[in-house]
Length: 639
Image (tube, rainbow, N blue to C red; front, side):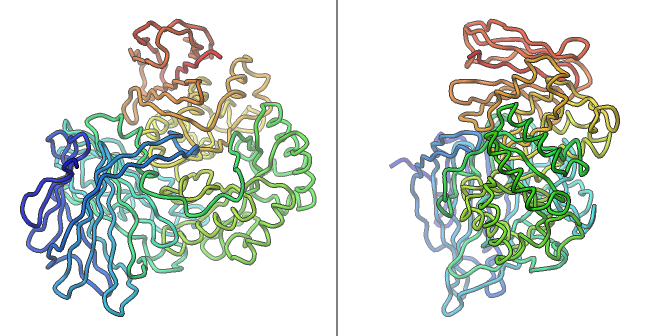
């Protein structure tokens, strides 16, 4: 058996990765549990705390080592909804148990792969005590002083439009020194990206959060570079439910994850969020995911009428798309009978309909209907039975506003009930999905990002669109599907393409986001006028684009500046590159998937209009990409 760990003393040990580059040291220091992380001999995390305090036990101090067990984890699974459809996961596992002076036991399970660390706590039952409330988790991540951060702040509760925050829609601050206070002073949302100078990179997140725990976040950072696990704010969800998670005994926490590398490739390509979780229920049907049009994005509330929805059903049919999304207010502005007619009309065009819902009962002031249909079991099942009866394919549920265990239970209940009725589910105004693509077979994506609707709302969002787009493959979209709503081809963001905010990126940039942003159901921002406003190759590209990928390969990039990413669907490769900088970027890249082949190349002319040409790639796979500011390049296998 390969040695999985190295003894330091009777109580302390180092867990090593299969390739021996990544090392995690676990040790007791004056009765307190700690760990540190190094990669290729360089410090990624300095001595950082582990442990927790519950209302019945204190695992923060006076611990003694009891035992440890080791094994190699080899796991193979298929999951079409993530960045890689077939995954072979290998890690070294160590399960270490400690106890308090009262004999109460806590076990920590560590998985250490070549670039990924995942760990969780398990608490044993102590006598008759079979329940506890976790009052504090000590788990920390202490970064060396040279570290800079790429973080987005957690918003304070019940602020923003109609008191709907937090909704994971804040802006990122790039390359900020560790310990810099956040915008709101209540920590940061997962995931968090850390650049440890010349030592490497680390992406910190969590996974496996369902109804049995709350969603956590990172605390404010100390001036010494320590960030710890923090629980939701008391005021989230209008104060409903406890901020502290309750677990049975025996019981366990979700997984905390750290992806580590000396470059950004492991950060972008990681699948750890899915490697350590399992499906919670079987799919009730063979769910089909795909492309959708969406009138509300550019035509807004005025489009929620029968005729405009027929227009977008026709648009989906013309594009060969599988779905159409009918957004808020449909219950009052179209009505259920007419929605049934639209569903029948869509079915005649081989298009399925998805309907929007407001999640809230009593936790925000968001006025849009349908309301009070998703917040209780009785109303939810009645509504879902109706949805099934008209042939609806899925639902989009909006405005959650919190990470409490109460809210996590609502997410899971909606997903589980929807599965009983054959409905796929997208969440908006919501938390980060934490392993949900694998845990819930009918989960089809979450927003949890400053998404495309903001391009309609503010010119600032258009001015920063390229910058934000070059962050997501490294951070938000690295750990979970991201329902951004990409590809807005209108030059002006209104119904008639003649007013409102102005797009600053090129059409090729917009097409590239269909590849860069990964989610199993893409609600694209294409409108009927786009079909005749652009060269046919622009629309043909969007007719052909898949939403499910078999492989993802990071090529080059830096968060907030530029990114080059390759994805494969079947035998067809797409390479998408975008540039957020103010100057043209000329980049030599190696693309072995295109070695000695001819490919379609989509790029920007000097006047920023789109062009398509065919180019021959050398045997070496090398090619020079030239990206305009706010522009892009796409290379695609010729069928």
